[in-house]
Image (cartoon, rainbow, N blue to C red; front, top):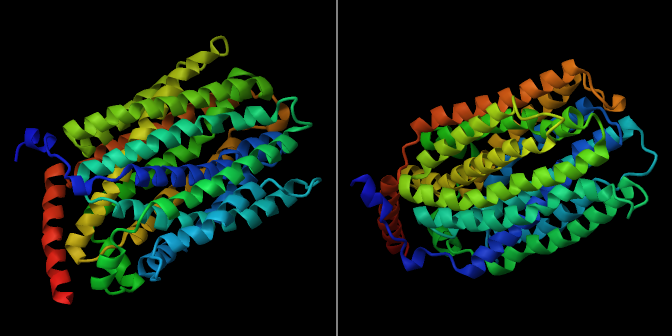
Length: 475
């Protein structure tokens, strides 16, 4: 079959996802994304810039939290795949952990007043693991439910674009939380933080419950009737033989490591390289910059949808990697205190490229699950979701640990306000180098990914025949 033939495959009506379900998945994504941003998006600016906790201590807390919970991820994924109830195997778990996730994400900032640096460090160690466990226990079945919603190569991209569009559009507001809490409306930033995150936590709780009511478990009755439970070690051994999975999981790990290592430096570059430590002025500017990051990501979704349709997911991921490398090169030239808005070039390029990498690897996930079923005759959405999440978590964990110590190593001192030229130069250099290397890695390694559009539909038809025969045998 030629490439041109691939482009013209039409999704069958039965493979389309109804609008009701798309809305449910979107609201769930908004809820989990909001809870995650409340927790991890504000840790460095609040605990370091406002409260004066050492970035090394913050990174250590994040590292301990992630390593501890990462060990549980495959166990939780295995549990979700093997869970059985009259309400399904995905939605009961989502319903149980939705409210704790919303409460803990907000509760992170309700520490007793007067806590010193080490007490705040212990508070992080107490809250973060519980919040992350709840996030995983909700996110794994939610992700599996999304994969189960369709078996079509292109419909998976459409769902990713639909969810990504609204999730990213709403997340523009998250960029303004830090500037908002510093306004005269509140007595102090901490009071503002508690008010704002409290309201967001309430909204997140409702959105997290939405897919429980709007999204059916389409494959629960048919799949659980023909698939026996499988031991975890056997599942992990078989997953290690899935070469397509290994390609994508290595890309996710390394890109997350590289990007997370210097991810927080965007705010630091704006606050200290451009504004010399004037946090209030820098926060307002960064609100606009963060919004441009998100808006460019939203706009790029439609470009990626077109590219994936015309050239396939593999070529589209490469395009996103090249765009990220170009944005990294710009970091060496556009940061100038005389022209602060030149930062927009970096944020726009980064927003579009990160969105593309996330979208393509996410939509490849369903194809890899189908390929795994072809190899081993099992559906393991939650287990594979946990391993995908584990790769991101470990990459982000190691990168996050390195980032805090990196700031200390280059001589950063929040109490000093303006930083030395030596510190600023090293900050800029690392801000460029790490994500550039990660993008180059993704560009090269994706060559080993072999599930093309043609191959995806061949797998789909073979699974359809095989599952029909299994169902007939059980009947």
